[in-house]
Image (cartoon, rainbow over all chains, first blue to last red):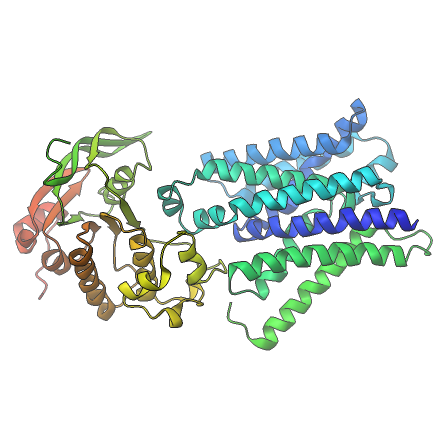
Amino acid sequence: MAEELAFSLLIGISVGLSAGYLGSIMVLEKMALVGDALSHVALPGLALGVLLNFDPLVGGFAFLFVSSVIIWHIGRVTKLSFETIVGAVFTLSLAAGILMIRDLDVLEGALFGDIAKVRLVDAAAGLVIAGVATYLTRMIYNKIVLSMISEELAISKGINVPRVNLLYLLLVSLVVAIGIKITGTLLVGFLVVVPAAAAKNLSANLSRYSLLSLVFGGVSAGLGILLAGFLSYLEPPPPPGPLVVVVGVVLFVITILVRWKKRISI
Amino acid sequence: METSDRYILKVTDLTVELPNQTILENVSFELKKGTTLAIIGPNGAGKTILFRALLNLIPYRGKIEWAPKVKIGYVPQYLSASDIPISVKEFLAFKEGSDIDDALSSVGLDSKEVLNKRLGALSGGQLRRVLIAWAIMDKPTVLLFDEPTTGVDLDSEEAIYKMLNDLEEKYKITMLLISHDLHIIRDYSDYMLALNKCVTFFGESKRIMDLELQQMIYGEPVCMVPV
């Protein structure tokens, strides 16, 4: 039991840190809803994994990445907002996934996370993927921010904006795919949205904002999982995913109060 | 370029097309080193598109020849920084290896005052100066400036042009600027290029006060304004 909790904490905190950091860009891009809805797109991929007997997370990741690239491309070509396109795509994915997964236990795990079954190998893989994703995002962070401020300035500085954006989407898909293990597809969007939103409430500069996003992501995931462990005597024991969300939202509310109290002009 | 001793830029038959429309058609002009060229014309005339082509940001037909070893700095008309928590220091640090304090003092800003301010919280005049500081940090030989005084009040406007003039003389920068301001064009540029898809006029800037010429450039009667 203690071992399982330790593995859960390891993967949870590393994914929380990484998702918070990557999510800070998504929130700045005004793509917060995209981050949230994208996670639902993983469901048909998870279903395919179950049906065809390969790791569902691989299927989830593949669907996430391909969908995000398609959505990104449609957005660039049609100039429709990402929210509009994702709004159309994600409900379809959710419906398709639910229709494809007929085993209710598997469906529950896919929707709400299944961290209790985390093994050492999962935890180690999660740690490595989250670490690499965070490191690579750190490498392109300033480039993406500059392209948000002015695409012309970024291009004139020699930044290949489409390539950097594509790499970022790949990294988000990776982190969201492993995040599904913790919170499930319904709630994983939280990890890329709420920590960054909380950090934005307290930040007037980029380094503080990205650092706080990372910390809030890790703290939400860690405390949520610990809380689930603490409450595991309840019958049935509460799943960690929703508790992670509750902790994160409490942090978010606290940042609003702090901002209001300090009248931070941001 | 054959005339690189005298000319820093030679544009020949430049044409830019979007799927259903031609934005620029057969634009040709040359620019001497160390001079300032004002690019003028009505809205939608293709002025910003010309800049984007000169920066090689969009596909075009025709020839754009810069003199060898030209280093181009660019100051865009707009930034989307209002919602991004980034300080002036962090923004300028994107240009690695350059002296931020030096660049800020060149544009008349006190680093202590603005360095830790949020980029989106700057006044229009301060933001323009920070953008110019950004552009001159890696010592460009050419500066492309899209509407230098967008969002700037009248007092700061004159100051910004004076500063640009000083920078031009101090660093021997060749400048291309897009402007609608007739007296600015007259006082702070040497040549003007009037566009309306094609070149409608290219010549010395002092001629801008000629009302017939203004009418030809802007395509409609231009009322007299005391300058």
